[in-house]
Figure (spheres, rainbow, N blue to C red):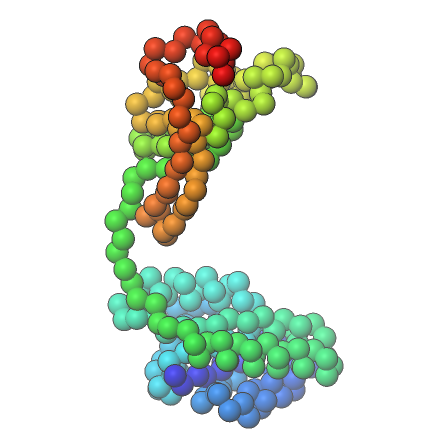
Length: 258
């Protein structure tokens, strides 16, 4: 893969121009680099398009962008990726803001090390192709404490299927052991109002176990989680209860036998 380096002088003052030119000259002497450009690249659509055109004109399969403002340019590059129909060439963005703040051999040496490492790294990257992945319209909440119950309820209220996983045989975590909480002196199972609600929500009377969109997995633990955003696959290990949950009235007699 042919690799190029673009040294961005956007916002550089006259005192820093010499160091940027020295960095560009160093990049041109690297064996793994096929093209070097010292120019001004701003987070604008026309400038980003010109940057990709520079890559295409030089036949580059990847590039290193050395810039003082990496966050802004990363956002601009990301926005341009969504509009491209062809595979996206890999671009490694590195921060050389130290050259804009100080002038000296140490700062220049640090920038040279960053550029050299990025050039070697980008040579092993592959273009990212657009893919359409079916999104699973459900969510997994790990932990059935007071916060986990509230999160599951909020997601279910938006119409999504929720799997609530708790390793203990009961929900609520430590809060059922609390009497009142400072400074409001409310019950430990109460949740503060949310999104314009005028009253506090009592999680003791929470519909989390009655909501048809919420599947509660108690005595369970997540053993494996794999996949990508929108398409995860989870393996849950569930311990046996030896009782009929539908007929349980919480009398505690089963605990005496255990």
